Amino acid sequence: MATLIESYLRLSRLFFVFNAIGDIFFKAFNLTSIIRGFVFQEHQDTASEETNNAVKSFASEAESLLYLHPTLLSSDQELFREFHDFILMCGQPMASVLVTTQQNCRQCGKTLVIDGKQHPIVIYSSHCGSYVGCRLTKLCCKCKIYEHYGCWSLNGKKHYDNQTLQLEFLQSSEDSAFEMALLEQYSNLLVVGAIPFSTYAPSYNRRFRHTYIMRVLGPGFWGTRRLAKLAVGYSNPRSQNASLYMCV
Ligand SMILES: [Zn+2]
Image (cartoon, rainbow, N blue to C red):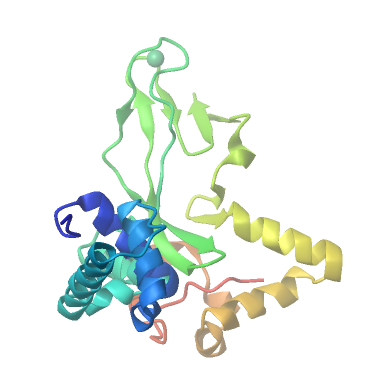
């Protein structure tokens, strides 16, 4: 009988199910049977003793896995937050890495090299709130062309790519970027409900629990010199050091 553990593909499909609907499918045999069919990519139209045994075996394997690793029920957002905080503790903010997909120099065609410097950047997301990522620069040592996320520079002059607005993030400054989905969400609200940014920003901060921070520090605290502090303080969103709120 085919088992769950012996296949990474089946495991990844089971993890997807845990993430999507939790462990509710253990409660009813017909639900377990359907989920097994999805995980194993098999259609079981006819009931038989062999099929029933396969479903029972699948259920006990999956339940054992969950017993040993209950964090498999964590949501994407929880895992993302854990990932974010872990890499911040390691001193490498990279929950999102903003880097161009350009591989070759647009002038001489040589392969671009990645500049070793990681620049921390605050990212405003529609689902994950605000967090610290980083941006990387690629360069052509010969032509001195610097390729950034969504733009490139030569002799100190900045040029934007045609596809800049199709990227996942829009870099709004040297140290901040907005997820395009968030901007689309806001633009729809603006059009439909005429909600000004001065209203939307506190709403966003409240949703991601930044209200307390705003009250303590005030929006004037926001500045570009504190990025190093952000990386330290963000693991506790109620800390006075954390200040990744959206400002009006
Ligand atoms: Zn070049």
